[in-house]
View 1 (cartoon, rainbow, N blue to C red):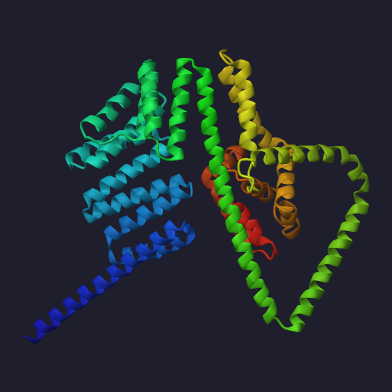
View 2: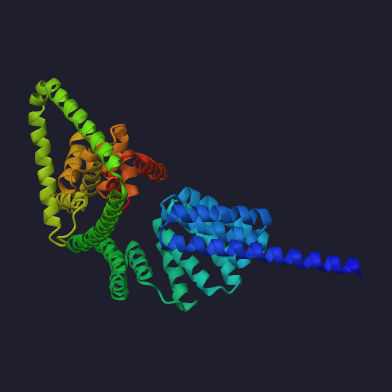
Length: 481
């Protein structure tokens, strides 16, 4: 009798401990999701890593699958598609080990989408086919519809396009599964019909796509499909109008993003100033005197160094005067374009004008070579020249630097002065990021993988954060957008 009571007590204790451990992992995952929703990705990743260790210790495969899935979504949000695929595959293995076929199938589909995003079309096609088949068997209508829509998009993106298959798949979504087509689906149908040569049907689906577009992003996607349809039909004027609308939306998105960055930087700067004031009130007179003496010493050393440099480089400055004037012209031209673009949103201060300049040059080539066999080649050559200019021409980099200094309170000059040990590559990366270039644009210019660019920006932020630069918060705010 006593032995039975002991066995029962130990069983209850084991169940109680397991339940407590499961609750801790569940709470950690929920907290990680909250941080993830606030875009605090680094903090969320730390929480998920701790939860992963606990789940591994207790063999909780279902929680492991959920954790790996969320970690993959963080890598997706930060542009690291390679690690996203790795963790999605880990999530699939964990859900399979936990005996969760529903979760396994959905993560399997997400893994196919991730491979589609990195243009691994062969693997993505295989995974979309399997998803559609198993979702149909499981009577999961929504997942089957999503798989068909993704497969239709792939048919239009891969090298050997299959517009007929794309049309059939989207028809199956609408007719057999009774799922309403989105504006994006209607745009794909328009492009598919244009590829088959049915321009009348293509135009009808473009109109439907525009009518059902709800958000500005959906409208821009529909206008891009309109550009494709009209270009294939030979209506180049309408095609150019649609393309200009797409560029206009892209520029407005960039402006709004930069406005939020400016507002956030302003708030952080104000909070930092208040905190600094409170510290000054608490500081002793001795500390203030020591700081003042240190500042005077630094200023004296800087002034002495500047005077020495002026004496040593007087001849060189005379020879570079003409070159400096050309840089000033570049900076003034960039500033003039920035002011012209800011008429739409006059409060925007950090907006990059590279896209406006690119659009002007592309339109010029389009106007000159419209209707000729040289159109595509000329436009590609123009785009290549823009990229190579930013990649190789020091004048272009100098122009961007002077633009930032003029419009952002000598931002780059202060960075050089306060962090003299930064390498030229770090300065160059800082300028691109502060100008609002995306990780895709920077990776194209530097001829590096997006993951490498992301890691370099991460390390640059770490260097700035760990430095003693007085304006490091301003530097970080400039590249956090």
